[in-house]
Length: 160
Image 1 (cartoon, rainbow, N blue to C red):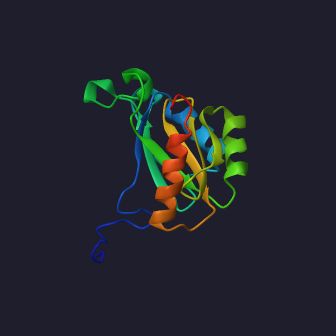
Image 2: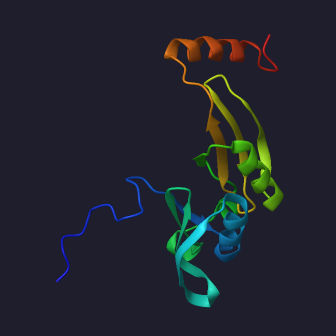
Image 3: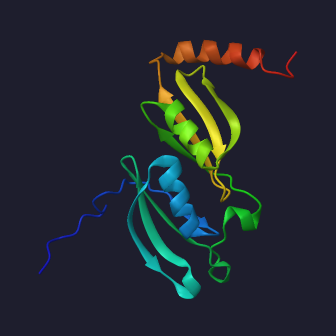
C-alpha cells in the first residue's frame, strides 16, 4: 500500500499555471524552442487533441491542454486575448528573450532596465498567452523604488 500522498505533488508549486491552447501540440514545440521547456508527459484526447500535458520551464511545471469549448475550456485566440501574464525570472533575460522572439513570440513591451531593479519585457506567444521575462539586477528599498517609479511616471510619453 502506498504511503500518504503529499498535498502538493513533487515538481509542482502551491500555484501552478494551466494553459488552454488551440493547438496544444504545436504550443509544446514552441515552448521547447522558446523557453527550453521539457515535456514531463502528455495524454492524448479525442480527435488528436491534447487532453492534458505537463512541461517544465526552469523549476516550474506548467500544465496545458487543447481547448474544449463544449466543456468551457477556451483558448485566448477563441475569446479574444488573455488578461493573464506568466512571468519568468532567469539569470540572462536577454538570451531567453532573443530565443523566444526567434521562435515566433511577438514583442509587446521591449526588454529594458526598469525602475524596480529588473531588466524586464513582455511577449505574446503565437497561441495568445502573454509572458514577461526578467532578470533581477538590483535590490532596492521600497523608498528607492517609489522615487524611481515617480520619476518614471513623470517622464512617460503622453504625460505633461
